[in-house]
Length: 338
Image (cartoon, rainbow, N blue to C red; front, side, top):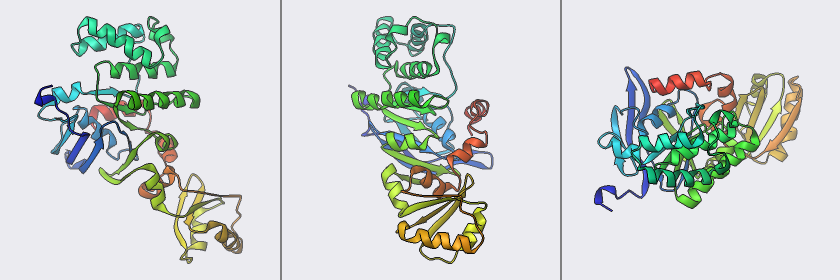
């Protein structure tokens, strides 16, 4: 192998990467690395900069300043080699439904300049990988949503990429199909050492599949670690109560020093504290004293949703409810770099 093709130990290296659109800074001085074979989750509220960040890594947008390498190739000075080393699976459907799975894969391989014999060999490999061999010559319009997603992953792998970018890979799929997609993704890492960078708003899935996650907000990385370390960093338990008003609860409990944080979301009040089992009676006493009806209460350990809420002030469910996960707006985002 030539020196030019020797890869860094890290699959992705970002150094002070910045992207501006006029006076607006979409990505602000981001420095991070993703190790080879790692499954890396990029999480953030709408408009936080994650789409712009990924679009620079896949060479769709040019950085304003800073630099980034993918598989050892600079995305600005060597974009061709960087592109050849990556695969992309967008959230929006991008298969030709009138073609068969084989024809879709054949077309992709030809676009990457693969010889016909190599294309056929690779088609057989990737279709086997996603367990669609018996449907290889069926038109895509006859595929289920989960089958199409698996085919898109197979297509993204056709040209032997070292890094696979997945934009909301399981959105819109039923829970069972989502579980199967994640099994394929983990298998890719285990058997082929493919580095995977993904965005998702299913934080329980990110928790279960990602080696590391980064939370980006207002263009900056505000948290980066393993899911377990991020959850542990919050400390304590979460007492979640349903009442007729979060602000009333906050006011009633404001003077207790042992409460670390109170967050309102989805009509609930989440109270973070230590030794929750000893403090719940006090919480109930204070809410009753202040005329607050507690409709339900539960105690749990912090989740990745709690981490997201802690750092961004919103939950993923609230982001989803805002409607900005719609396909129309995401297509617009990829086109404009937001």
